[in-house]
Image (tube, rainbow over all chains, first blue to last red):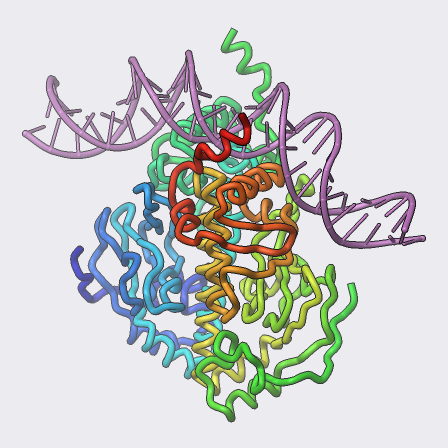
Length: 251
Length: 251
DNA sequence: CATTTTTATTGATTTTAATCAAGATGATAC
DNA sequence: GTATCATCTTGATTAAAATCAATAAAAATG
């Protein structure tokens, strides 16, 4: 794994993610102080790691563009996917408790990240109450993302998990100011399946059902939500039963 | 639901959980300042709520004695258990993001909690760097607890989930300074099953297997770990196969 | 203490998703 | 463009856990 090298790049002041990332609630002058501790790196290429489980915790990572996944490997060599992170997300705080990262994070596509050396950030936050508050808020967001993952995995049937995932993904895109009925999600189906605690086969079958019902169109990396209301309903309902439409086709 | 009323009680200075809870890393004088903002309540009785989903976020809760569970109710009326919290645990930070709690927390037995009004805590933390640091560490701990729950729920078979849960529970008791091979866990089997994403029947069957194999003895609320090595092995292995011992019995 | 209610266990059956297996499709390399 | 490789889809079968059902055992209630 290559070390990430610092480079020049546009700062927080001109970043489109100000309202989501660390600058939230900060005054212009404070954003400049924040800016001074942020290290910007060249683009992280697909497959490059931001950190690995066991590594010393030193910095937080703010995703500026692209996408990454967090995961751990089980004894059996399987990937347990813990989350997908998009622009505006801040990760790395899992490492604070033991000063050691607890999972692996790798880029899923060409990705831009901002590095925030934690000791410097902590010191600065003590001087800028709004920054400290935002750090706490971002951690609270992390807690809630984890809770939602647990809730997805607790859902008794696979249809619900998939429906809820798509619905929640849409909301995340919405909250970041992206189009939420049609978006690109650069993650393999296999990886989404693992995140949902399913096999790729089961995931594929459910996607087919959702497409057959004209609720979702998800081909490769492009997702389109055709019927948001139906999707939301499915996310909470018991079973995704196929209506006559399909029976006709099968007959 | 009754409002929790403040009352007099022994402070942080004399609390046995200093090394786990907020006072960690603080000097004597700072502990006294922390003490001054902590509200202590009469014992919370079994079934009483610390907070409910949707309520305004105002305070954090430190568990001093007893046990609580966090959960949400699904559309179908099922309880999704999100976690069990023991003395030394601090909860409530899920509410910061939207200034509204995202789950319900209820006492499982007679429980003592310390209330930390968040705005006061935040202000004090800015003045006491070690306190601010500990607040961040406690949130990091929360993130990791959530990650571990996701990892449990991602495990492909039920035996592993139960084995890992017992093993992890034991470690939690150990880290709090309690006996870790024999302890009392005041939670219904049904609730543990829900936490693990299983039905009570499946959970019961697996417990029976673990007892048959002399690995764990879990009757009602008393847990005894008879073979920690075997338990750890099971937590990661594929299937919990029953040896001849059982076949003989069944024959 | 007896009664009622809740919780836990165990068995039989059904349902669901995993596994096994074969193609189809799309991406990448040459 | 063609070949190769990885990913995805679909079908058949198996395995695992859920469900249904009936007791048994505790706990709570009067």
